[in-house]
Image (cartoon, rainbow, N blue to C red; front, side, top):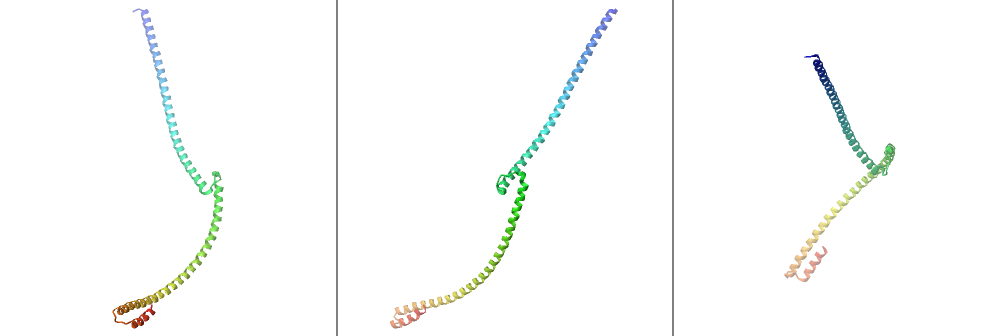
Amino acid sequence: MNTKTLVEINKTINISNMKNVYLLLVAVSLFLQAHSQKLKREEMMLQIDSLNKVNQNLSVTLDSVNNEKELYFGMYEVVKEKVVKNDFNPAEMANIIDSLKINTNSNTSSLIESNTSLKDSLYLMIINLNQLQLEFDNLKDSIEQNEIIHTQEDVIKAIAIGNLKQLKELFDSGILNDEEFLILKKKYVKKL
């Protein structure tokens, strides 16, 4: 082989090596670019996951706040309708409660005074009731005694009526004459 061929082979090998090196550099560069993009994508996915978790936490917090808001407005409506009876500024609720306490205390003292008066009235009514019960019992006893008398009078009248019926039967059968009948009749009629 001659030197010229060797030089040419050497040049060809150098060019071929340079191409290989160049291709290797391009491949490494492309690999590094792809790896860098992969890392960026992974970092982005982590950020998206983190943002999704933050979003979920915010959603839970928002739901909780909405529930509290519903309770708050429900309570506001109840207080407005049942206690204050007007629209009011919830920031002034402490003053409203103090005002209600004052009104309640004054109402309580007037109720206590009224209660004492009612207790006294109730006591007097109980005394009157006991007196009326005694009078009722006395009247009841008196009525029961009169019923016994009425009952005895009723028995006497019933006997007299029975005797008059027998007398009429005796008269109708001819056992008694007119004069006897009239005398006995007057006697029994007086008992009625």
